[in-house]
Image 1 (tube, rainbow, N blue to C red):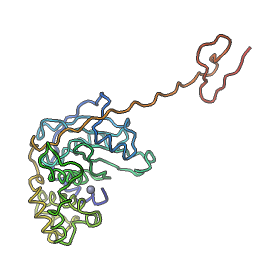
Image 2 (cartoon, protein in one colour):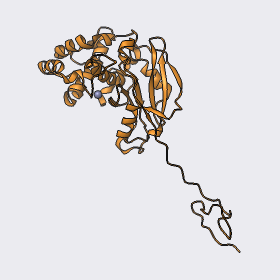
Image 3 (tube, helix red, strand yellow):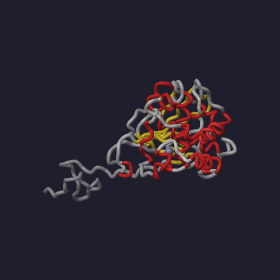
Image 4 (spheres, rainbow, N blue to C red):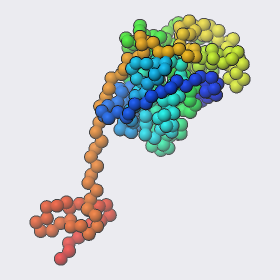
Length: 300
Ligand SMILES: [Zn+2]
């Protein structure tokens, strides 16, 4: 999350190719991936305002589809969301199994009363990281790095670590951060080890793909020489994810999450009788409720 998401966005758009996507039809089984359900409820959205779609990337990530939990008032089209997920290099993308968008309707949810709430990346049952505003795909790179952070703490993708365990919570990340004594960004410095890790991930990808490295990207002049221990620890652990191209590896794909039933909406009350309908009388067995604003009157 946070304003830091803008960093390198243009470079990502210019350099990272988009993997072709195929969208499946809307789910009609009245189900929702568990993590989407959990976060919809947690963040006070109406779960029935989400539509679920499978998306696959046949050129670099065959096999089990990803799922997009798409809020009907998302500010980007479903196709755009699927397209921008396809810009994330496949080895990174596979750390997610589900993506989720939020509404941008002002006032619809007082907790998120601003525009551009965008997308979150989800993995494992109940675990989710990031509700980023703005900036595809830089925000997605940041969020997916949170997922990779979780992946690194797991023995393998099929048996993810329980709870919200992250590599960045371990001494293996805290030590280099503390030894460097610097964070990659103000956001990373203020928001803690996990956010620092996610911002380092974005810097590492930029450094890998940008011609001449990150130091040549004028509007993103993070001083990587100040965080050499973090860069080494990051690349040692996660370097193989942070490169252009590549393809998904089935053994690293996260398992499909549990599905939840979407509760039925309460029945709408009958609209009431239109003006001048019969609404009562001797032996009348029909409806007696008038439409709003009308009253039932006795007529001789
Ligand atoms: Zn974050």
